Length: 219
Image (cartoon, rainbow, N blue to C red; front, side):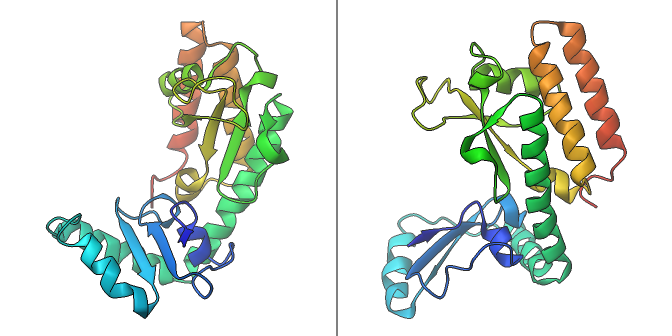
């Protein structure tokens, strides 16, 4: 069984190996890198289909939501378009650029970088007292959305954490490329360095809005 929840869009875009020929079952979400509505899919070999169908319906699956089905159809159609490969490739380029820029700002990247759409950041090298929970809250105020995340051998609880997880699919969809990743890393660092200063957070929020205003959201 292969869980492709996070990377289904990267697989569809040809920048991650495809597990389908090798796995008996592949599960994935229709949101995240596939950038459709929230939902999930199960792919399986024919011999497992009846058992999976029986387990899912009627026991777990409810009535169909027609608007969600239509939105998934649009997402799948977009993923089948040649332009989707460019989107997937840019996600990976943006992640690499963001990881490099974050490292220059003093953050430690778990595994030394990234090969996909996510950067996992250990905050302790930037500020030993800063937790993932606090960083998430501060950056929310600054207009930057990410989430706290545990890191390997994290001494803090999963509800507090010593790390944050940053993804690039949304900003890539908006049209941002490598130069903007350097700006984003700088904005993150500024917000966290000035996290006790309301004026500093407000200034970062204003700069975030100015950056986003240069791009048509999800065009």
